Image: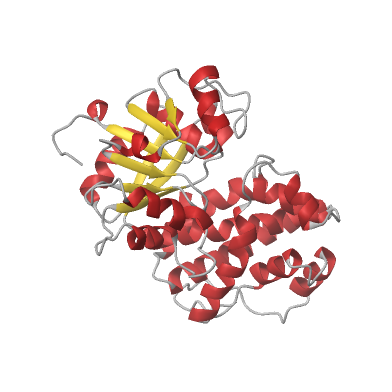
Length: 349
């Protein structure tokens, strides 16, 4: 990314026309030259002609300056920054297609919140692999409590941009920050990605609790212990413990566990009410990242010897091995232990 170009002169591409990709593209298009790539032709047509993404973000007016394309090469030509706004399980395939059109030095920001199922790799690790980059400094992640519809409505929001290349991070921070969208920077890519992935699994658990009719004590206890799980795994994988007390940890966890706009929580509510996974998934618009992430998180945890009881029970409910009621009983009848504050001992609960 050129160091002498002002933010207004930079050209960005957002790859992925889901709710969050569309929202961020709209936010950027009002300030800088931004193009949105979408796989779905309906999304491209709606963005360009109706200034709306009826499929994934209905009833939200998009700026006329935002242009959408269906050809990936057209979206990436001459772009200074690329935002990857595709689900975690599609980062590899879409990233490989992006690699054919992207210069090596172009900074890439991932919005994915999950873990690749087959390899147990984080999205930035996958991107580094498919883009053929031996150095990952220019590949980062944007993560935080960013419910798309609230950001699109101009409600005050905050997020974290984690990237090892501090100069690129500072320039991207200046591009993304608005009077209603505050961007902080961090170099803890691992922590931010682990936080974004695990919170989706905990949000399914929170939704199940709501579906079972449990109250605020139950939710608070679940979220607190969920944060402990999230932090234990993140620290064991090399993340900074303080990251999990910030926007990409507790902040994102609170929003995703509590908001009716959260797809993961919504799925959990329906499971708690006795619906099957197939029926519940059919009624949720967009990808529910926590479904594929649950077994992947457990795979990562097993590799570093971290116990994750809430995530384990969520996975058991998703696979049909246990009912929500049985999963609750298992959590409440675990051997009593002490509440450990030292995250330097991630294996204890």
